[in-house]
Image (cartoon, rainbow, N blue to C red):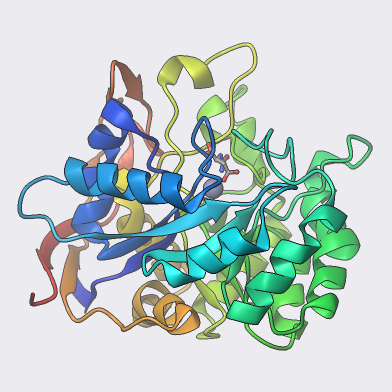
Length: 349
Ligand code: NCD
Ligand code: ZN
């Protein structure tokens, strides 16, 4: 069996930089026409000039003949000036600004410490209609790690949405039923990305037979009731939910360590893994809108016109892939993915 879809977009992606980026970029650029590229490099991309330079490096790293458009994001800090927001809006390739609570995840140390200090930047974003992408996790160490999304929504995100009702908001990589409920209940332009791994795995995967560092990501995997709520939202046809892989490659040694870092690499089989998730509930016919229409519509961008074709044909994921001078272990390493990428027709030029 084959399925052909409009060529999709990935609305949340980590591409890294340099030789690491060159190693992982082709996986995404083959499947997806566009991707929203996260700004959490080291140092983070806190100025429009730095974002632009990164975009040029991505384009330069694209294999010849591959058509792929990076959609860029600015990294918000306590000191982002409203003028920088206006510059970002005026720059045609920046689609939003990313709010990382300081300390919440990889390379977030320079993120937002005090939400009170970013209010001028957020007001400017609301004024010019620049979407805010949010890593929605409380960083208060008192909050249980599995409750961090819910706590952040209650303490920060819901009040922020009330204060800036016209600010377009994306709850990135939503992982809980409370997150899904927030998006459904919010008025205005509020959406959420959903990863393939949060659709396929619950938190048992972190401890299956022993500690599994390659299943560790942030927000961390949650219990089965939450996975089911995410799957239900993804296949519901609700346009506020769209595909965002959060594919986040790290060198094997940084994951298989006494303090393994967070991030799951899924770009090698991203669309194929979503197809598995949708198929598991008999909803393959809903995959196209989730993967190719809802995000473009949310961001006010044209839908793609190319196509991708997947075949229902299992293949074995390699034990690891090259990653600069290291290796990266992908989701399902050494095991089977049920769908295979068969063909891609890029949009006509
Ligand atoms: C991401 C990374 O490694 O950059 N890690 C992750 O677990 N998702 C950062 C992020 O999106 O939180
Ligand atoms: Zn991410």
